[in-house]
Image 1 (cartoon, rainbow, N blue to C red):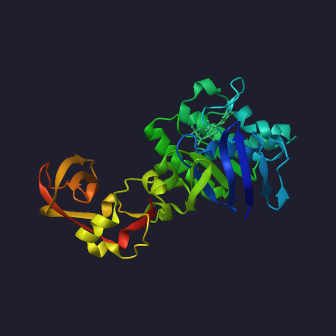
Image 2 (image 1 turned 45 degrees about the horizontal axis):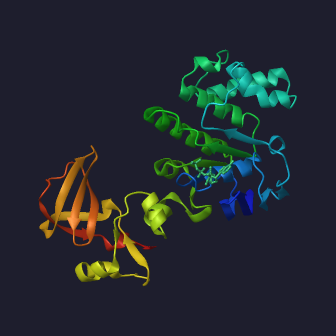
Image 3 (image 1 turned 180 degrees about the vertical axis):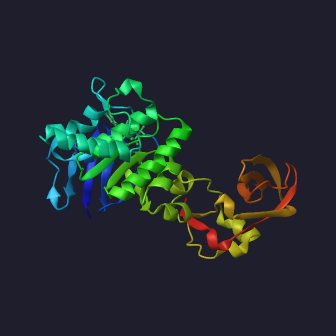
Length: 330
Ligand code: ATP
């Protein structure tokens, strides 16, 4: 592991923000810390950055213990949610700031700044000031500044959340491309599951100061292990084993017993005319139609490709695909 976070604990008075969290980040890996407000993800990122001290635990980077090393000596690049560019400096001066502090010769800085401006696709703005840039452009510059000095780790604290949806989607793609191309190990905090699914090699889903589940995006979406993760990663359709065994016994395979529910993603629920339940509402979303269904298994959500030929009040049967259910701890 490039970075090892070992048994990190942090409390604020009576509030346990991190409860002995351990996590590794591989070389070149993009890890997203995902979870609802208050789960501890920002605290963990700030501890990794060195902006906050931990109560106990260790941080090891490439074999070196960084636990006591101050933020400015860790050599990490950081991008925050709100644009944190120096307002009184040009774009070029902002991007070259860290290199200048290190004593890099001016000509080398100028070349690096130009290369980075090309990389973030803003070659013409070196002499502009932050207030002359859009929010998306400012975040691109903040990203260029963060990677200018070849950081050992890139830390992103909800860098896209202040941007509008279209710019956010564009910049998401660019961050992804850039991170892949440069291979910088990256830890990003987000509360947006779609963002985590698109960006991460590995998602670390957190709840109440603990890691609830960590795995690839496909893992967390298709094979959540707890109800919390199932709900957080999308529409979960959680079904009780008792109703399932009575109505759809073929779906009981793999039931681990006890306190488990079956999670069925809406795209794996085939719907046809029938008598089991009723369509409550239909929502056309362009590429799919979302149906809300009232069934003896509970209220379920199904998503059918294109424009579905169902209307509210229609009687339906459902045929879930047994290959796609996940048993989660209730
Ligand atoms: P958000 O998305 O809202 O930032 P988060 O998942 O990043 O949430 P943290 O900011 O890490 O969560 O906070 C974890 C817990 O620690 C919360 O209960 C929060 O109120 C508490 N906390 C965080 N920072 C402080 C602080 N400086 N003083 C007191 N409590 C704090």
